[in-house]
Amino acid sequence: MKRRILYAIGVISGLFSALVTIFGVFTTNRVMFLKLKDADLILERETLAKRFDQHWYETVRKEEMWIESPNGYRLKAVFLKPLDTTKTVIICHGVTENKINSMKYARLFERLGFNSVVYDHRRHGDSGGKTTSFGFYEKSDLQTVVHTIREQIGDNALLGIHGESMGAATTILYAGTFEDEANFHIVDCPFSDITEQVLHILRKDTPLRTSMAIRIANLFLKIRDGYTLGSISPREVVMNITNPILFIHSMEDDFILPYMTKELHALKQGDKMLKLFPKGAHAKSFNDNPEQYEATVREFLTCFDLK
Image 1 (spheres, rainbow, N blue to C red):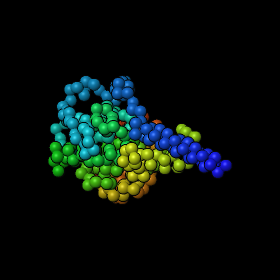
Image 2 (tube, rainbow, N blue to C red):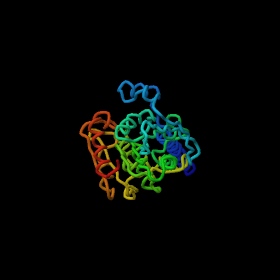
Image 3 (cartoon, helix red, strand yellow):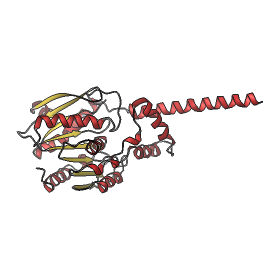
Image 4 (cartoon, rainbow, N blue to C red):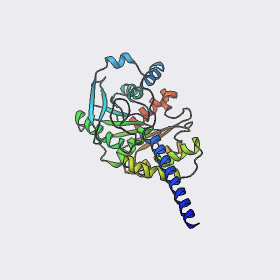
């Protein structure tokens, strides 16, 4: 009888371990290898919406660049130079997108007197990298992009960063973790903590309701990709940023909830501005409010003498 009990316990333990492993691999696959949008569909979407002008892109003065990431791959960037100025903005797209999605912001900043740099995050677009890490590795990629552009435009040139969604969180993680070589930041719909964000998605879209899934995911993420979700928390570093930040969010966003941007704005010390648009789904504040969005950015630049 005792042997049977021990055998049963062994079988149950083995099954439990197998289930945990299957769940851990499945969950981390969803994080590390999140399905990307088709590049042709992004191009078609932005072209039809008149947010991307193929003729302008083909004729504008520009420099295509390959930037070596400290994480062991190359990042594809395009330095767009429609204006005779050193004033520059680096634009960071959101997860599953690519640099074509950033072109609408490049045109916005052109109207405001800035050249711009668009680039593909790791594992997106033309850049290398095997996994998406929601800011953990992306922040050091951004540091390298910023340093490369700063060397080109000079120490006295005005340099800003605009980030959307994951790109916004990456911007905060960069500026709050490393020596900040930019002069200002604009962050559109960032998450304040990736653990809370993942839990929100799990509770919204799956039957999972507890943090046990996060603990299992962290164990496997650490083994498979070298980090845990707990190390991706813009709220923990935003108070380190001394340069001005414009925080933007849409109140209709049910993917990354607006309270996260409000929280980050409250934690930021010093120069800051907050704009909450009543209309717009996730990462669509500009798409649904283009004139007001541009006016907000112009006001921010004027308010903090960044023109």
